[in-house]
Image 1 (tube, rainbow, N blue to C red):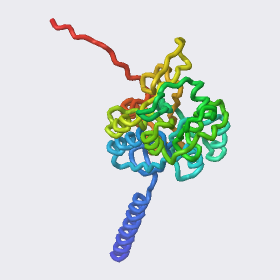
Image 2: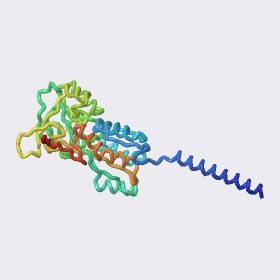
Image 3: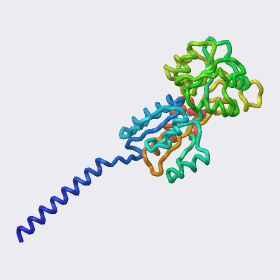
Image 4: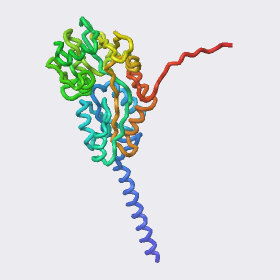
Length: 308
């Protein structure tokens, strides 16, 4: 009887040991992410790189148990990445069409979430010594179609959001002229325009619109933001530079949205990052970068205090 109890006790102890090891191994190998911990990969349109870098810096500082690996690419490459299991989210300048949403639903068994986060703009830049920095909408159409022989520099050699936007919104799906050439990146567009007075460049506003950023202020000593004719204004001959104010008021005609497209059907880290960008801190970061927040309005209110 004594030996029986001993064997039973030893057996029970061994069983507990294996259950404990199994539980420990299960915890160590659990790679599922949550809104506040884990690791994911996202792809981002390169024209939004400065503001998304700031979003990630603050997010990682706020949630140190998270790692968001970001890959900056053309818009077309971001959408290709969305079809890969390794990419959880993309940030681009357009949402999904109903046809695209149905395609992803048939592939994933659920529709990705997507919505606007902020409003950006395609900035038209010229050298600080250039003779002309004011363009009508018709001028832009003539330059981009090749009717005016001014070299136009785009922000990438593949299908970027800037290329797509200008074709759709300025040329109305027309083709670029032979005078339109591509740089390797937004940074290279700025570098070329800062060195040449005979070209015009097109980049995302977040690259040159932040007047608090020393690097961007250095750019603005070598280049100028062009004024573009307001096509929605009732008054004639209104020309506006790209800015948070002119985007919000609808005066700058080359404004565009910044979208997230999220491939999650459970609350994971992608959802956490989306919520961060959509709520107060993330929206303030967009505002601080001189983009127009899409989710929250931050108004200044004048007030006075009466002293008795």
